[in-house]
Amino acid sequence: MTIQQPATRPANPRFSSGPCAKPPTWTLNALDDAPLGRSHRAAVGKDKLLAAIETTREVLGVPADYKIGIVPASDTGAYEMAMWNLLGERAVEMLAWESFGSGWVTDAVKQLKLDAKVTTADYGHIVDFNVVDFDKDVCFTWNGTTSGVRLPDGDVIPADRAGLTLCDATSAAFAMDLPWDKLDVTTFSWQKVLGGEAAHGILILSPRAVARLESYTPAWPLPKIFRLTKGGKLIDGIFKGATINTPSMLAVEDYLFALDWAKSVGGLQGLIARADANANAIAAFVADHDWIDFLAVDPATRSNTSVCLKFTDDRITDGASFAKAIAKRLEAEDIALDIGAYRDAPAGLRIWCGGTVETADINAMLPWLNWAFEAEIDSF
Picture (cartoon, rainbow, N blue to C red):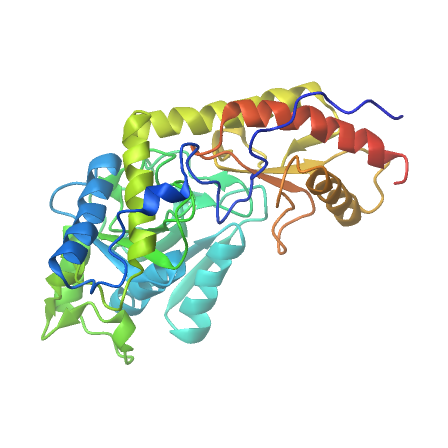
């Protein structure tokens, strides 16, 4: 069946899950105040970096006694920095239900060769946190970016745990309530929920994590780019803007703009509301169309940022090819860019619904998704 193309197009077709859409009010002029050609150790550079740290604290509600640092290599650099510095003091539980969590398992088991219990769940599901031993160090992703499955809350993490919790929150921070008292290490990158530029990560440490850093020395060597302590003491300057390596002041300026925009839409709760509205629009579409469904099995674990969908029509004999055809058709029409499922994930679509995406654009895109489905289904 051929249906007519919808009349309305999204104003912004960028629904990529990383790098993600810029804030809707962003223009290149937002970067005019970047101190280009200046040392990041000059007063102007230090001030910008410290402002990025403290505004992050303000928007996310990070406790005053937690340390926030800007580190190299995006969320990957931040999380691996934490693993290399903190793990090995006690046994570890590694939890994974999608590809990035599985990557941390590889680091722990094959690279650091830790005494690690590995618990995994298939795409669309989540591990049972009720049986996790939090007297061990526990590593997990809050929101599975490639599966669209998230931890609903932190209630299962005990306050009196003996181990540390290391949380990769890169597609959760600024879109979900993170219980800071349950998280000892939290990492994310600028290019996710706030649509910042790539290559920089954020590392947040609880007082318990700092105490571990100052009381434990790992058995393996640490490259300079990973070192958080000197002489058994935390290198505190890292958490005041004295970065380990040279940051991009252009990217810092971009992040500062995104943080100010976040405050203008109501801060964290405003961002959560925007992401929820986007995800709810997709949920309504899924409820009205029997050929598509969420990859996440339990509605309580469905992400409000990286929304992953699967095709359920019995006529589709090659799911991967069909999903690629849909994504290609929508890209050709400049309706939705970069919405194919992650390469390691089951065939389907992944639509970014973080707060920088306008709900009006989601609502304009969805009829086109229906159009693309009807245009392709007869050939499958």
